[in-house]
Amino acid sequence: MINIMYVPALILFAVFILYPFVKGIQISFTNWDGYSQNFKWIGISNYKRLFTDPDMGTVTRNTFIYGIGSTLFQNIIGLIYALFLNMSFRLKGLTRTIIYLPVIISPLIMGYIWYFFFQYNGGAINDVIQLFGSEPINLLGNPNINVWIITFVNTYQYVGVAMVIYLAGLQTISKEYYDAAKIDGAGAWSRFAHITWPLLAPSFTINIVLNLIGGLKLFDVVTAMTNSGPGYSSASLSTLMYQLYFGRQDAGYAAAIGNLMFVIISIISIAALIMLRRREVTS
Image 1 (cartoon, rainbow, N blue to C red):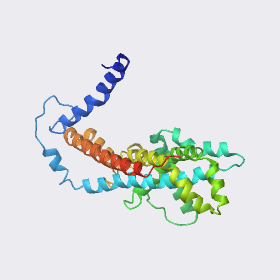
Image 2 (cartoon, helix red, strand yellow):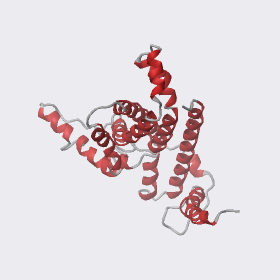
Image 3 (cartoon, rainbow, N blue to C red):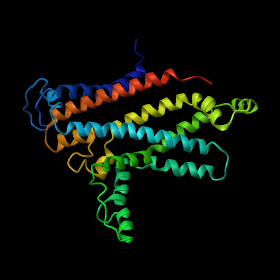
Image 4 (cartoon, rainbow, N blue to C red):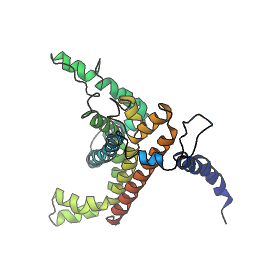
């Protein structure tokens, strides 16, 4: 029998998660424009369209760059920060606060802040370039660069989360392990490889899964910095879905893309979770 205390949570889950999810699946099999009361069932046409859409390859590639690229950079930099902050030195608390501070800023606002650095006309970077007599560079308009700029901004904002999780993991590792390793003559790298790295596995698992989910559904920063442009050169699946629904009134196809994104994120995150759980050890 279900505890009555669970009922409010179950109702909220059903109304705000389960119902929209089921409704989204239903809409993906229609030609609904998002506004009209009249629409018809078109079967799997929207899903067939995914394989013929000329923009889908670029958008899917960008989505994987945002997800995997952000995950890679956030974990490498976050671990370095955590190892540094795990040492004793003055102003450690202030340093930790400065690194974590971007996390509390809205991603949309963060995107606009960095937009004013990278924009072509009047951007801070181009102002410096022109100061030295060179021509300005259209960084956000270059399809080969703008995706990586957005990945950098997303990494900058959320690296503090990875840092905090790794720092919490480091502080649970007993110093006795390191003392024993030093007695046995183990160097710094050997201690990291054989003590720190294995015992940080749970923290690594949490960070990887969280970063993958966050990066693969990236929306705010892309919208603020490039609005998916030029064309769809910097679009993610999230921003493409948004533009199809509100820009083209193509809600049925947008729902199909949303379901594709759900499947991709679920498969990648669950696979990562299963593989990473296998290497975890307990201290």
